Image (cartoon, rainbow, N blue to C red; front, side):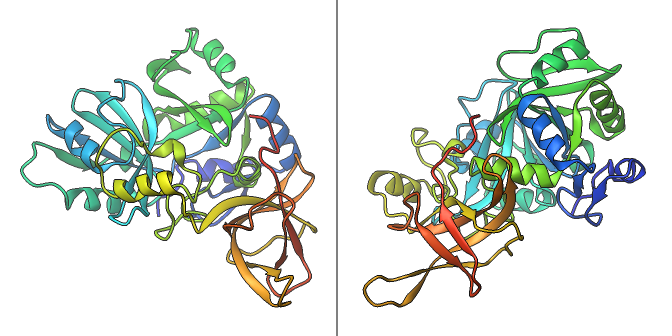
Length: 358
């Protein structure tokens, strides 16, 4: 697992942290409600310097990736990025990442922490005589993400230049050259900045000084839970189809063949998903363990049926209660449907989305 480059800085500033090597080790700087409020009304900064990266370059790079990946590659404009997936032949998710087109025959894949090596190896198995070079660029990748409705305005003021309306740009911030890429994080406008490992501390401190509030995993889970955004490694594994995890923005139904495309298209055409990620309100604020089963009593037989599994717990400030993201079986996904949590007395009620406007 990659290590955050800013771990020592967070420790010195008194932040609460998970052990080094954990994905998203920064939990909070101590004021979770304040950090959440800044994310939804102003701006916050997230440390993502533990993410991995793979580069795919060469004259055949575009065609190679286009025939493998679930989302657009060839039609992606230079300088632009979009979420993408590598699926297995059964249409289930192997890897999630952001794919950026940096030039003709030059692509950059920003992966979840610790995933770069495995993704490179997976891509390499499909490489035969193509003129392509695959390279693990994790050591050169150090993204920091600014999130919130005022993030773009603040960055434009810091750089002294208007930010691009489409795609990324290389600009100077705090006397450091940085690659800026617009994105969307947990339903909120965001910018990903990468100045490499040498510039990460400088960029982080400049953003904080300019008003971006540092925050971490606790608020991130609250924000994404409220808009039902799945997190790889928690809500997403190799047993999940993209539509089950609400990843419609990460695959294309128009681009033609790719690995798993036939299954994805059949699901879109005929339906038939056995489960789907849903948001549920919990009747208490105690954390719910990942893997907790959702049960519902059959009104005819009186038998308790296992109808889902919780994958994320968070506190929702929009709902003012604890919530879970859970995969719920079809025919039981109507808002207001109630479930028993595990074998205990806790209860969860399915909530209509969205609970927070983007």
